[in-house]
Length: 269
Image (cartoon, rainbow, N blue to C red):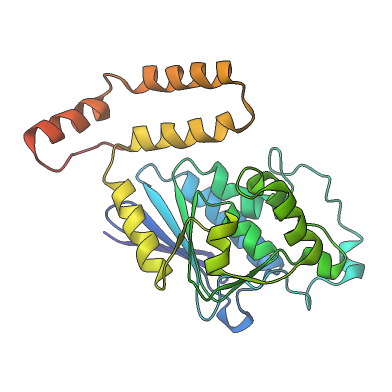
C-alpha cells in the first residue's frame, strides 16, 4: 500500500511498499525557495519519517525546475533576521533552520538527494544533509550566503568538512561563485552525476531497501559517529555495532536468503 501525506503545502511524501519514501519540495512556482512554511515543513517531514518503523530509505528532490533556490529573500528581510536568536538550540544540537538540513543526517535511514536546476545557499545545505547526492550535470550550485552578507549557517560547515578540501571550500564560500553539477562531483559535493537524478537516486534507494534494515541503520549510525572519533573509538564503535547485529533475526535472514537464493524477508526495526 502506498502512503501519501504532506506536512504542509510545501512538502509532500509518498512511501511505497518497499519502504522507500519519495519526498518532494512542492513550492515549484518559487523554485522551492525557503520561507518559514518550508522550514517548518522540512522539520516536520523529518520528524514524521523518523517515526516510521518500515522506512528503508528516502529520496529527496524538488518539484518543477529546481531543487531549491535557497532563502526566499522576499520573505526574509535583514530587518526580520535581526530579531531571531540563532543561538537557541531548539532541536538538540541545532536551531530550527539548521534542523531543516541536519534532520536528514540524523534520520536513521539513508537519504539520497536528487538535485536538478538551481541548488543555492540553504538549498545546497539541505542537499548536503543527505547521505548521498545525485546531481544533474547541468545543475547550477552555489554556496550563496556571502552574497547577502551572511555565512552558511544550516550545518553546511559541519557537512562539507571532509567532503571538500579546506582551501577549495573557503574559495567557494568566499566568492559564492556558481558551479555545475559536473564540477560538483570533482569538488566533492556530488556523489554521482546523472541526467536523471531522481531515477538514479531511486535506484540506489531500492538497492538499500532490499537489505537488512538493522544493518543499514547500524551502518549509518556508525558512519555518523566516527567523523570526529579517534582510531581507538572507531574500532570500538565498529565492534559494538557488529555485536548488536551478529546472530540477530535479520542478520540470520540475510544469510539464509543468500544461501537459499531467494529474496530476503526482513522485519521492521
